Length: 496
Image 1 (cartoon, rainbow, N blue to C red):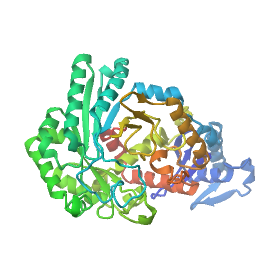
Image 2 (image 1 turned 90 degrees about the vertical axis):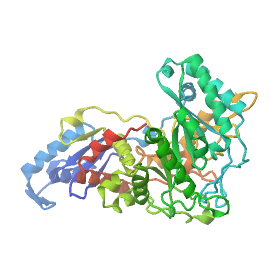
Image 3 (image 1 turned 180 degrees about the horizontal axis):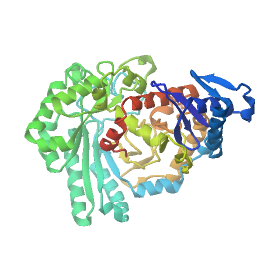
Image 4 (image 1 turned 90 degrees about the horizontal axis):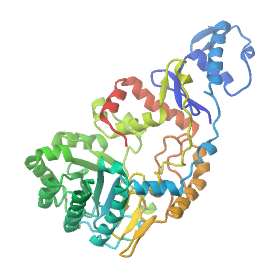
């Protein structure tokens, strides 16, 4: 694997070098030379004609010699150097990496209860899915939460950096507001710790919004950041129901309006929305709804299909970024959706340097070692504590992958075993990743989408060389069409 050449809708041609992790614009003359020579040992003498025609342009041998010298310059600067993807993807998790993450936890999230007051049809714990961890519909024991907090307070106090930032404490469900008494206990305990230690805490909560009218005063008083789940208008939201298929839409919207009217500043500063995309909504329709009714945008995810017998159930179309942007002709609508985040990650991963001249490409940028897949290093972003006392790196993974346990006696986190588990999966996945042209951009997680129910390992986002060319062409064509877009998202998006 060394480079990918791709064309944009405007007729421009670019070359992306994997070794240099840089992109250059190819003139037709240079493109001709690259196509002829990049994968061979021949020199310019193989061109016998004095004149050649390429892409409707005529070049004499002198002009081709000029482009040949540019090619040699690129080659001498390793622009066509083959990379050993197996070596590049040989990164391993060390036990000390996990211990460092545990000592610097930025986000501690509790699943307050497994119970929920809604019966959302696409919920992975509902009747339409058979592949999920067993739910006992229990509540989090406050003493376990307190024990967990005490465990991490000692770690937070050992790092002076924690006194200069807020440590995020999350509340999740089920529906966290069903056990608001436990939320209050945890908040009050952390406020006591804050007074005695100087540590600062920021509280966040994901909620379906049904009980917000009852508890909003406390949430405002304690500066909670809220994420409210809503899938759009009444029809869009029709899968989010109570028992007996009763709609939840009117109640949630009423509670949101209450917050808007009573706590306007809090609403605009602290309230966000989360939407599940499925066969009854689409991203543009949803964002238009939020912009019009709530003067907000929403973060979208796609309903998961985990059960083979229901493989088309709730299926969202379009399902990919290619189809999303091609189906949207309104640039302003596109910018208002969550799609720009994909572009932000694309720029971050692919374009440390975008060169239109050859002096820039001599700036060294070495290809570092990667972990196979896009799986996060364990606990590097957060720690999630389930109501059953199980420890996970986040709430998005399949709950059958338990990374530790909290009991009344102790907290069990075997960092050596976790490192071994990760590295075992990395080894199994290395061959697939080494042949995937998307390995730099990969966002697939082992524990959410790659490890199947039968423990086979298959990445759903594998990209071949031809597909990679289409992938780069898609993004870059958009950027050429809207040249100010890059500056816009750099100013308005923060990638963490």
